[in-house]
Amino acid sequence: MLPRFGRAINHFSRIGSQRNSKFGKDLCVQSYGKVAVAAEPTIADSTIKGFTSNPVVSFDKKFWSKPHSLALALDSPLRVEEPKYEGIKHFILKLMLFYCKQSKSIRGANVVYRRIVSQVDKPPIYEMFNLEKTFKTTFSLLVLHMWLCLRRLKQEGKEGVEFGQYLYELYNHDVEMRVSKAGVNLLLIRWMKDLEKIFYGNIVAYDSAMLPDAKPDVLPNVIWKNIFSNDGSLEPDAAASRAVQAMARYARREVSCMSLTDKEAILSGNFMFTSLENQKARE
Image (cartoon, rainbow, N blue to C red; front, side, top):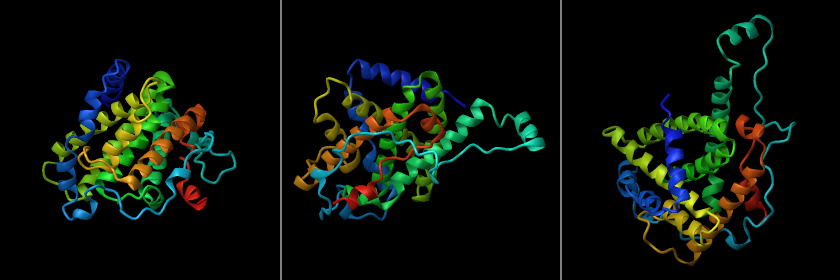
């Protein structure tokens, strides 16, 4: 497996530490138009902004609560435990390196990615932020939640970066399948390269927005360009602005919650992002 993720993370970390966010801002909006056109040939003008015109959520009341650990309780039915085998089966699996660190990390990364997909593919996140469910918005939300996980994994040093490599490979394979399913079969490698550039550009932009000296409006602006707007230049109307601000609060809160989530829960995937169904129910 090529260590491109690790090299890229180190490279982009240096860029972020130098506060060079222009690169991220440029990449986070490039190629979206052509990728969206290729992946969504049947989408009409109703999704030009990726934002529905009928707000149904009281955005100003959302995501102000105190952050907390996202780890699942030990008795939670949503937990995924390591399989336990005994006798000859255990012996054979041990010989096959089933219990080695790498195998455990790969299994953990699979669980983590399923958590990301569960948050991104289900209706609540689109209903919460009044987003059209298109290839572009789903891809952008995948990247946002990948960033949340990769940011937390970097706190675990080398082990976290290696785990992030496995997570990135799962993400990359999933995106390729989504692009193919959307109807892009010709020049698939080209589109994947474009999406890879967008992914890393977004990661840089989000990291830059979270720097201690970043202005408060930087993260909402990045979220608007990456998720809500198709070309990164249109100004949101009042309703869209509230949705963007709410998503910025959601992202900041999830960053804090992930930091409060212990290493075991992160590496095993035994955590859940904040439930947006519960948030909507509190209106």
